[in-house]
Amino acid sequence: MDYIKSLFDFTKLPTKILFVFFLITGFIIFSNDKYTKIFAFEKIETYKPLISIVFLISFSILIINFIIYISNLIYQKIRTNKLKKQYLKKINNLDDYEKAILREFYIQGKNSLKMPINDETIAGLLSKKILIYNSQLGNRVMATGFDFPLSINPLIEEKLTNENIDFPEKESKESLEFLKNNRPDWIHRMNWDERLLNEVYHF
Image (cartoon, rainbow, N blue to C red):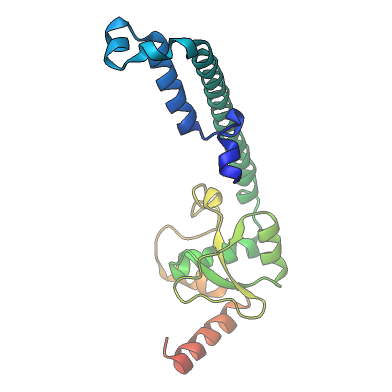
């Protein structure tokens, strides 16, 4: 019923339908005598004033929709650039524990990791939008208790460098020792839980 009502309200018609109205009414109004005879438009001469009104209304709404669409694109572009600048400032001011948490994604080579959201630093990274909840619970990563699957915000990830999180560019004995000794406190518990699940459920 709502869809039928929308057919009589030009402002609520989908853009595609408006464009069809615009093309058809425009063709009727501006067609020459040759096409008028081919399509028998002589019979609708009486309705041309009404057809002209439909043409003007559909054209006007299409123009307005186009302006709104362009405005939204510009707004989204400005907003995205602003967010990127804010995020860049955040990743340049990470503390050591925040860096250790973000390094885990690099160490484990995963886009999503299960992390304890009751950890103060992780909660802070979530509030800063550096970490986000992963709605796609793939790779057998499931929420248990306070442990939730988290990912690095894509806008953050595209700006993040090894230098930002003190991740060694080259593998060496010293770099491996650094990574081993500077992992989050809870990572060993998470690894133990994962191994236990694998043994019990044969993951």
